[in-house]
Length: 281
Image 1: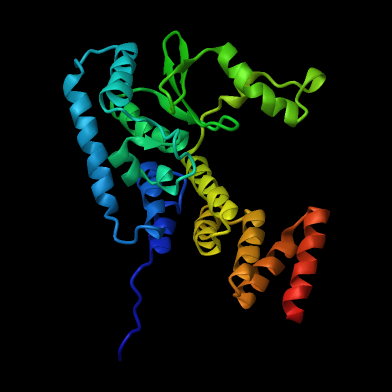
Image 2: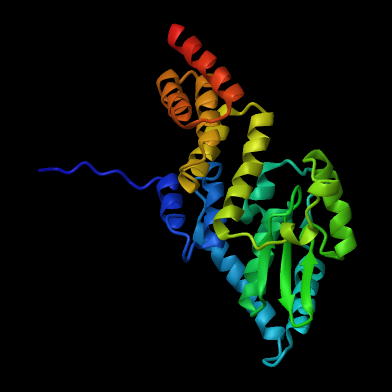
């Protein structure tokens, strides 16, 4: 008897990486996101490239280096010597989210730069974490005298006043003013690896949606739904994108799954209308 076999897809590989929160390999999971656009990419080569950078950094560190000294050396190495920084000329290029491209060009967006910086920081023993700050991903390091917050886009250390100023427009939009105000410290909680991968994917989602690139949008949403199976808004968005691609059966399956779990009356009404239109077509 012959058994039908299928080689694991890029999505299968990603699903294996993000299957459990414990031990979720952040660097590998984010590197694997690029496989949709670069199917021939060797993800292991990305990991090896970061390992080589880490080894170069470790060779410069005295064994008894204090955390503050380690942080200063890391920032000089990453931002000055290697020249990593934000891609201010083409911020919405999808390559800014792909770690193999960021390693090659030394240009990215806050979260992709943060993932690389965090790998190096943790590799030299710093208590470092990502921060899901509104509008701009940050990193932080816990030192004996408190925490240092860094903008991975520029390498700048941010004071509490800087953070409050950056947060102000978001708080106004959300109505978090006066008696509803929330202290800035609540926006500085460490981000879990799953949250970081989700933010990478949501950045790509916004780029592809803005460009009406439905096929690439579906590929990103496939990953988001694997990452967060109960994210029903993402299921709705995938259904709408599939409809744009003319894949009616798959679109209806997603939209009806969304309706079975949705609790937003306005979205429910819009999706019900779209379902009726797809069935009538």
